[in-house]
Length: 164
Image (tube, rainbow, N blue to C red; front, side, top):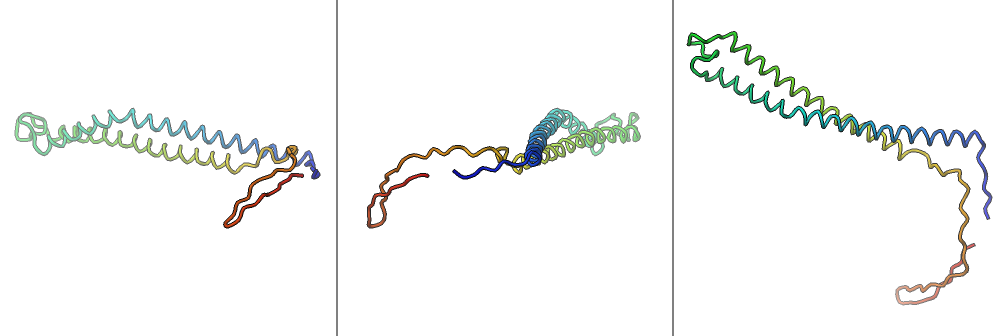
């Protein structure tokens, strides 16, 4: 038997505290990262129809400016034409599209932050100390002698193994 030295209570307490800290930070990071990533994906998914509608409205407003239909507010040659209102409609549509694009950008940044936080949590879990570092060694299950065939190139033999 090899001697087993017990750590001092202070060493054991510092080790156990370090193990707990790494586990709490690790699992907390993984969980928080998953929540941030999930919420960001939901934000992007929920914003997709708003963004699609805003894009269609902006495209329609630009089409009215470049090729106005008769008697529309963008037809400045007709009585109903109103240059200021046409520009206001286009600016409003552009503002709604910019807002939808900003929400998507926030979502994509959130996904990146969430993945980074989760990865940091995984690093804490992987780099933590072995929780069983100071556990007593397990009793070896030493058995009697073992015989084995030992083939090799151009030879054949019998080997004897034993544990102490």
